[in-house]
Image (cartoon, rainbow, N blue to C red; front, side, top):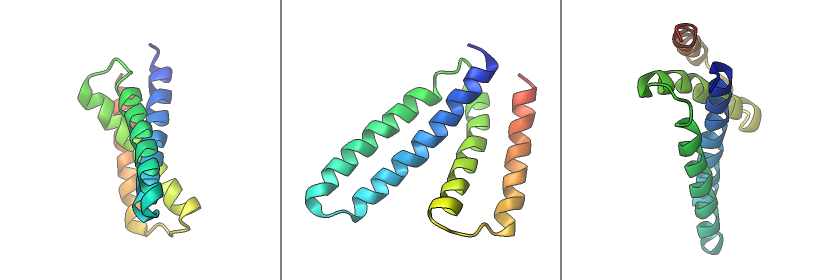
Length: 109
């Protein structure tokens, strides 16, 4: 598997995890008869995340080290664009450190 395909899979996994979490959160606020459906959908999406994040043939630490970058970016994008939350300076500075760490991992592969 190419390095770039592995990175693409990690990006898809981050979107699946953030989306699955959003589905579960929606279920927590749904009426009782809808809650089970939301939970089943959330479980399916989170299973797809777990399968996808483990597809690249990298060592576990390298894999999740780079994955954290994509999860951070996906979570902040959802926070800003969907939930309309502002991103505090500390989040931006911390995020820059997370992304720079991911670059170190990616460029060392």
